[in-house]
Length: 219
Image (cartoon, rainbow, N blue to C red):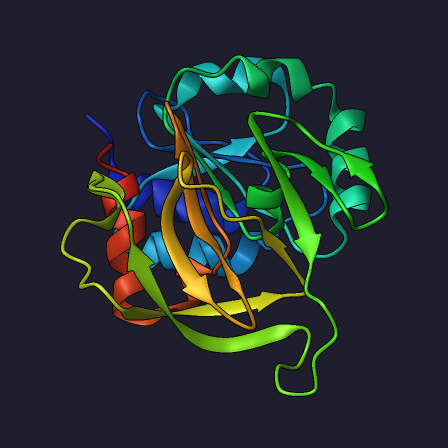
């Protein structure tokens, strides 16, 4: 049985060390993730978590999160340096990419003309310049689920989530779990087998973001 108080205390004392035991969420660390806002949200929700720094760490967890901020090409380079790419591509447990972490799951990004993980055979594109829509897309926007999935359970259609991004995932009906409109329609979240991605930041999206993280912890 997982001791939640012990896990939380250990994570606060040494965020680089995953908890010992089974279950929980493993956060893949590669130097391009917004770790502290995410871990703060997981702690608020009482969701056990730990850090993944090497391949052996994956076995301790039942699901995984790939965080990410900044430049997709630079993030991919850092991820490749960890040596974890083959393991990530072979994962069979629920795996969630957040923001740039979601973009890494696609095949290619226009940001730096970068080849990515190619788990989803779709592309990450740059918003076209537009006087009406400022880039980056920053702030709250509505998200509309397009498929039934437990990740969005108890989240009303049209709920607002918090976005910060200059690049978007091209809309493809086969992989789009939910969509958003900002100068054009794009995939706010994607889903393929055990892999999920969200362009918004659930850890910064209030009650609906917390509901999504809780749902993910139960997939």
